[in-house]
Image 1 (cartoon, helix red, strand yellow):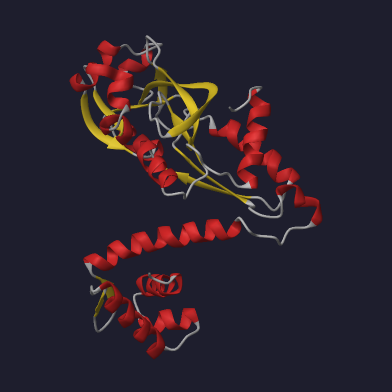
Image 2 (tube, rainbow, N blue to C red):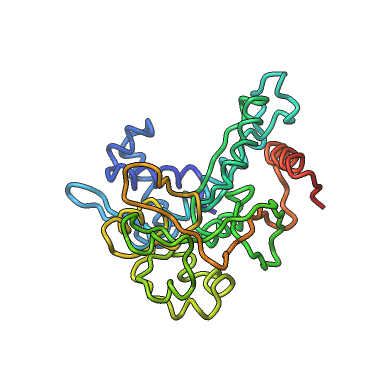
Length: 304
């Protein structure tokens, strides 16, 4: 079994691209670090480092180990924090243990609601720290599966049996982001017939993921998708350049400023529900339990 210490050493070398610099950062000698890395390579039976004259680079196996090592260390740190006891007496209602909440989410205005709960917790328990991972549904669920997140905030519909869901009783609406001075902006809404005649910029999740069929159905295959995005902010520049019209959620982009942008909703309306998602049979940290208690209070319902 690989020691966490060796993985930390390996990550330091990958980050510094130098054994000497990594040794300085780790406060150990260069010969000691070199010996440790040779032992790690021998243990795995693979070369991990390419030792060049000016810098160290990773082999294909080394790059793979770097990604997995970071996940392992993140999980170890998250686990250790569950036994953190250095809290003042006033915060012992969190059992003197986990003071971290790890959440994954996509881009949604519902984060205003969630961060309102976060702020209430922060006011009452200043030692609670919040960590937000931003990504699409697949990336969030992958990190949930690996135990790196306590919960996810995702757009529905949800049909995965290995997760538990809490409907937030909120929904987001799809529409089209477009130049303010384009002819289409004269309309109050955008029809599905309009979509089929336009060059569209779609979110990568909607383009290749489950939302493609569950939200748009067969019509999606008739659309002219000219580009995709992960973050709508980056797509706004493509819209301003005239590359296409961005299919996105309402209220994500400020269209009131000086930029040549405006938003029009779809008609008929295309809405998606929002869910808090967790792994089935998951054991929650005291901080995560606190969040769910506050969330239940806000929603006026109970989690089974």
